[in-house]
Length: 246
Image 1 (cartoon, rainbow, N blue to C red):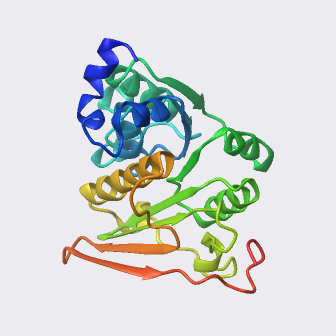
Image 2 (image 1 turned 45 degrees about the horizontal axis):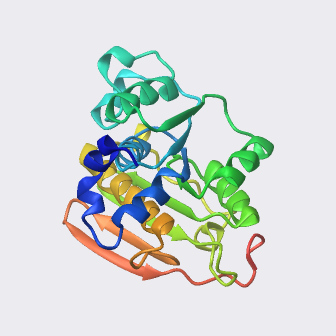
């Protein structure tokens, strides 16, 4: 690393669990972020500032004025612009050394497979079950770790699926395909800082996975009640009848 990089990442390098070797691992890593909304915004910002060398940014929406209450990677001047372009502009300002790949078209299963194959970790920051089920399926097939987050109202949740472990459950073990669709913040609302909390945790879990440090939330569901300021963690059992991972 150059002197400027050593200074930029010095507070991480000071950590013995990371050091210069770990920072070099981050610089050579690639993360796929699916969704650049409330969750993807803080996740992308922390991964970019932390020195993940390549971020693939996937979102096919444009910035809307109603997004700005919580989607902090975008600004007022970005309204009407593609979210990938808006996010890339902000992330480049934060860290011009990293590579940003803009994926502004909706990914089908084939294009998603190609992107997941290149990634060390995938962050699911989408807001609908159909996308989450497809992402889960492809990550399981590619054995790529998946960090899933969601938030609506005052409730947030986070789960990590480390598919390098053959016995790990998957997202579909937690939410069967035939189940009801969940609430959307566009219908029920969401408190802004909540998505920041969950998105930041997605970034944190991703860094731990890349660096192989600490205890991740693999096979666990972390629930956060922002209204009551309460955390709760439960194990996710593998479903023996799951059509994806059984």
